[in-house]
Image 1 (tube, rainbow, N blue to C red):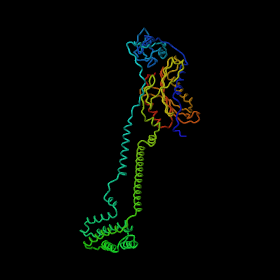
Image 2: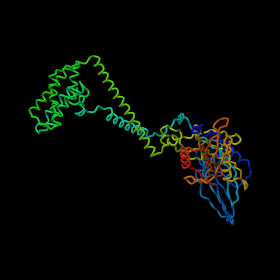
Image 3: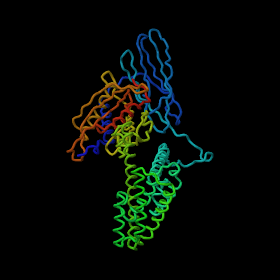
Image 4: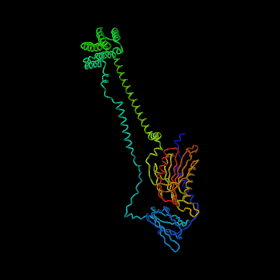
Length: 556
């Protein structure tokens, strides 16, 4: 089985439900202590501020620690005032004030606040606040419909630059192939001469011989060599295909045979004239004979005439021969075209191979192959990442895709104690990332109450149990301290496990997970990532996500 296409099947909602179950467990203990607290108003308008006050009387030697951060949820703490200290005999009276507000109407309970005095924990009363809508006089203030939701497009990429670059490269390759393979190149003088008919080529050779200065410098050998070559090549192409290789006697004998056989209409006198010139040329070339210049010119005239005589003596080609010659030319053209096609294909394959080798050398073979075949996990890594805040208190995180809100059911009896926001994204079960922010009130308090660290560890165990419930097995985890770039401290739990790839839970493959947990007295935040093991792109995705995490809350 090809496990490259089998992925983690732990669903986002089910994972978050497992986390939520741990939060419910945190309310199983009840123990309260009281300190004096009050608010300046029990009813405010949306967005208005109320002042929450905690009063503590204690010995002057005792250290007092007041609540910090967003511990007043569902109300938002917008300002923490300096502590007002008044000395009364041997005691201090400490007054700590907070500015709170809420931007949604309703009835809200300010949760009990924890105050530590000399290492001992005390708890304030919970207080009820009514947040009222602002009354609008519709006779004076015109009402408008709520604007519809609009879709937000991803930031545009520079795809057009890559398209232009690809077009430029293809144009250059096409131009080079056309220029060197398909273009009809200007013919050289030798190529133009080679395309002439044999008769015209022989006549042209004699003209060039006239333009030479062989006779002026007594260079008879070269003169007669070119002179006889002109007639021999013509005879080789039109009469006897071994005329160039034959000796003078062999050539003359062959011409007499062809004449006697009525294959060529040459007179004996014409053959004798040709024989005389050829033998004289042999004497010049091999015996270094030096004939008179005028005789050499006469021999040139004889050869010129003999070329004309041979042309007239040749029979006219039949229609069948003409058709065969035309078909031969067409075959040659088709052959040349096929050759150009194969050369073009070979050039393209070579260029593609060279490009592939160069990119493989620079970026790695696997990386290039996965880019060509558009491997999904690589596309996830190279896609347009999104930086956003999720939940409240917000978790700032960078992810390959926007995380979508997940509805997590909360029992009715817990709705006034828990507010939870969850977001997640899943890539066809290959990769899952989810965030969960939970704010709760009425936490167990007292000397034996669990600390925020205890609650966080319980939440992590709940997440691992949720993975096991969904079919995960052989879970091996390791816990380490984790600090975000903005200084928030938490716990990182990472490890490996096996997970099923089918509903019957019979076939298992290897996976990895990372759980980042953060907690203070009233806030629990988690980031849960599960992904396929041994996928280099998912490893980089997870590293990038973890490096981007920031929390906008203060921790105990």
